[in-house]
Length: 80
Image 1 (cartoon, rainbow, N blue to C red):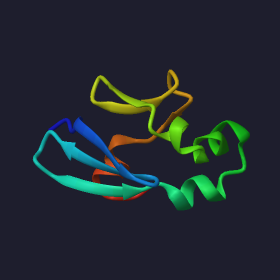
Image 2 (cartoon, helix red, strand yellow):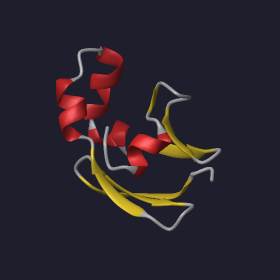
Image 3 (cartoon, rainbow, N blue to C red):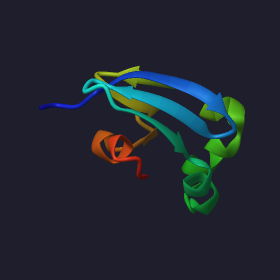
Image 4 (cartoon, one colour):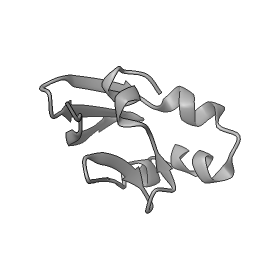
């Protein structure tokens, strides 16, 4: 079974609620990942306005034309 993200809702701070094609829902907090990032292209998403500008494309969540993205299976498992 191929898993995809069918819905992603920004909640607050760096939290996004994901709904997956298999009915699983997860809330992922990206704050630790972003705070520990070394790459300035990643750290720029500590700006919440930038962070909120994600989109879903082909069942995947992306920021700025794949400048930042995560493996769907990791999100599905609640890990980043």
